Image 1 (cartoon, rainbow, N blue to C red):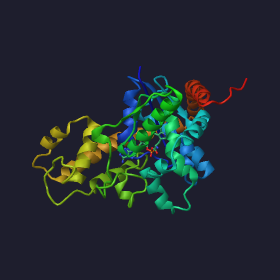
Image 2 (image 1 turned 60 degrees about the horizontal axis):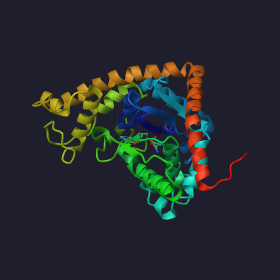
Image 3 (image 1 turned 90 degrees about the horizontal axis):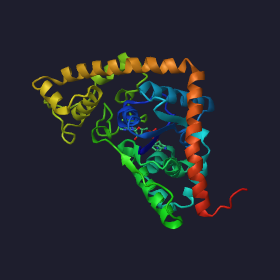
Image 4 (image 1 turned 45 degrees about the horizontal axis):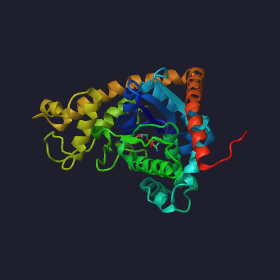
Length: 332
Ligand code: TYM
């Protein structure tokens, strides 16, 4: 079986619709066909200032949401990044292989550090993508299911894998990004030209899966569209409507073309009302299942402990090989 690996940050509490449609949804289907490793990336979460108690709670919350979304611990390996020390260890080796200029070109770093004020950004935020490289290479992943915003980090991973292999001999699998076109980038409901994210300019543009379903329905009904009235998928000319169609199509498994036909001659109001309902039907059981896992932290922690054990077995083997390749004297 080919292998997949991916990760999600626990920073934000509730996952948003972009996280789910862009990534987590694919994780669920890939566990059926791939040897799948999925993790909550708490090491990445401390690249910006964090509250310790919140980080702990949000790490469990992230794991609970992943299970609620459909990850099955019998079909995939679900773990917490800091439970597997090899991530930080391989990251160091990769840091030493990355050019300063190369790291400086990472656009997510530029965006995030600009937000904090460049001087206040941590060195950890700067090397964030290199830790991500280590995450992926440790598991010899063939594919990495993510949203479009992670593409550059996967490119860096490929470059560094090839560099390491070229310099020290074949060691790492060179991975590919697994990005589905339809959901690569889910847009803000109020500003459909920017991606949906926690740093949205208004909360009305962001769908948090754990929010009250009523408020979610309201956000969908007040989504920004355009002054035209035709329901047609055309991301250039009609970004708002196209975003709603993508979301609707993915959540229901109905083709975008079919939706265009279904809503031919109807107004935006009808589309939004129906999508609001679809969304409520999706988030209501999702919230309940998440709460169910949170109510039983012992079971949750034991799932994560088993996952860490499985992950470590793979990670330790890769790290030992990489250490030997770079010339570290084995500890006898
Ligand atoms: P994170 O936690 O920011 O996001 C988790 C996943 O959600 C996707 N995503 C979106 N997809 C479509 N539309 C959107 N609006 C949208 N917003 C977010 C992201 O692309 C991501 O796949 N650096 C990663 C975490 C990470 C990782 C890894 C991923 C750490 N190590 C190794 C893959 C492999 C991140 O911050 O994702």
